[in-house]
Length: 221
Image (cartoon, rainbow, N blue to C red):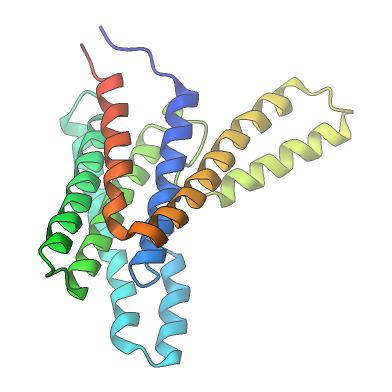
């Protein structure tokens, strides 16, 4: 027997986690985007022109890490029958990353290269989530790690409602779904900004726990 999927809950949780992780790594790991990896192109170009060459080249490392994560997620999909197995490994990776930061910070030996390593672990975790979204698109209301497509769809839906006097049930239903993704991601960004500024990368423990809860809720029993 498999627990019935609550698509709204899964969508909200995944978008919050993506927004949270993206902002935490940006705030606490030298402006590294962990979910919107294409944003690292911008940071790379800016830091390179600014003269921070070493910090800039680290941004490009996110792309092979992300690619490896997506490939890994694809292999998991063929190996495991439970779709949410990908979430388990994503959650475990985030949780262990946060614990790693906590331990080495407590010991007073948390160095810069460790910061970048943790950021890359977060990138890998978000790569797994991206692969989940592509492989199991019907499990969510839309992409959970990038909002451009969701905002575009929400704008189209709102335009249809304006044209039809707010009497288009399909557009209304679609708009509500897109608002879940956008609101979830934005909420995650706010939480990640606060957590990252106040406590740093150790707060990756929180999304790790959230992802594991989602996995155990939806696993086969």
